[in-house]
Length: 306
Image 1 (tube, rainbow, N blue to C red):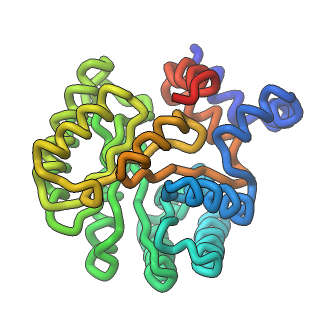
Image 2 (cartoon, rainbow, N blue to C red):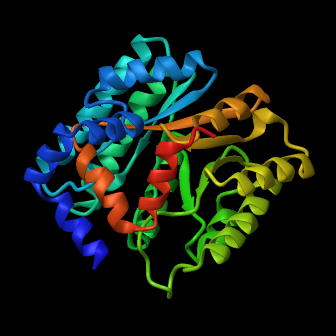
Image 3 (cartoon, rainbow, N blue to C red):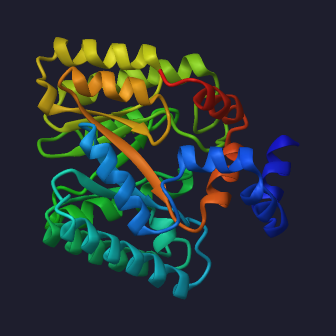
């Protein structure tokens, strides 16, 4: 019932205007969204870089329904990468891309061509692309696209979600030398047949996957705000003899900023996942719809800096 209400809210332009105009809502948006434009995202990126952090830009707008929208998303990424290059931030700012935003649900070949153009622009700019994970039904297509892109753009990163039962196997497949893999818990609502349902089971899977990645030859990107899992990741890195330059932590913009600073001060690479764009409202509400437990998470993030 709660999920249905959130999904209905995500499509309401009237509610969007109300949320945008409310003072409290503005604070929430500013806390978690870098702005509407690439220019605003670059300003936020510069501030994070000045604090010793690195960045992954995410252009919001995964609900692409037309070819025109997919082309617009591609062109927006190309423009953002040009700005990253011109700002001299290529060594510290990459981009995260959802294939659904590039038209994957309309035409997989089209999405691949758009992703390829973005990867080429990223390489020219001196940075890289990470392909975001989405619902489990798109995982095979996304990983197939990843493997094709890596033939010419080997730095292209993958995202794996620990709550999916298949992910341990995917970690083994993607733990080879040079492979950049972001491991996160997962945020979409998935059936028990494909995903662990309890927090404990998800955490156990995360640690098993983390061990596979840390013991492999690739480059693990540990994406979690969970203090216990961060501590375990630090321990696993020491156990497998990884230096701070051989893996990184990733946290979301506006979430636990003091922890981001602490990890960076310890010599770790800490990448901030920084969403921006016109579709911020649908992004925030859909994240709550996909997993209503995120309501509590967002509330805690608003009241805590640690």
